[in-house]
Amino acid sequence: MHFLSPLLENYLADNSQEEPSLLQELTRETHLKVIQPRMLTGHFQGRVLSLLSKIISPKYILEIGTYTGYSALCLAEGLRTDGELHTIDVNAELEQIQRTYFDRSQYGSQIIQHIGNALDIIPNLDVTFDLVFIDAEKKQYDYYLEKVLPKTKSGSIILSDNVLWSGKVVEPLDPKDTATKVLLDYNKKLSQHPLLETVLLPIRDGLTLSRVK
Image: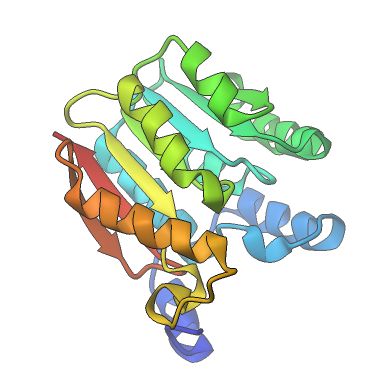
């Protein structure tokens, strides 16, 4: 399902902050060398992440799902000078391209990569996060949330990506479609969670913004 026409999507991008040249290069390399390049955050949503991070001014950011590093670089734009961004991905094959672009940015020394299962890694991070971005295996979203909440504080922001799942969340549910069922349950949980204030934004494939009370 396309929520907006390509013409309107281009208009949104054209009338938002320009995409940094380093991210343009990363986009091109991802499309040339990596499978499923549509997983990239992209220009418009990337500028949304950047601006949200700048508004929050986080000292500590956690990203679950690095892919080639585009969203991490966007989030890092709002980091305090003494801050850290911890990003986790299960795919070790992408580690080098991530590191290359992280080190080419001004945030290289502040971005810490973790390779492995986020559910195992998160409990061992001795950090309280101001900003969390969840964008990994959809079937694990609820588990990520439960691992992340103890690592946040009142006022922390949790962003959840792809929560509209190409519009499948409003279509008749295929009993075999476990990913959509998980996201339906997750979206309801976020909206009703006693520790969270939540709004679901129709940005790209759906971006939920939750504030820890």
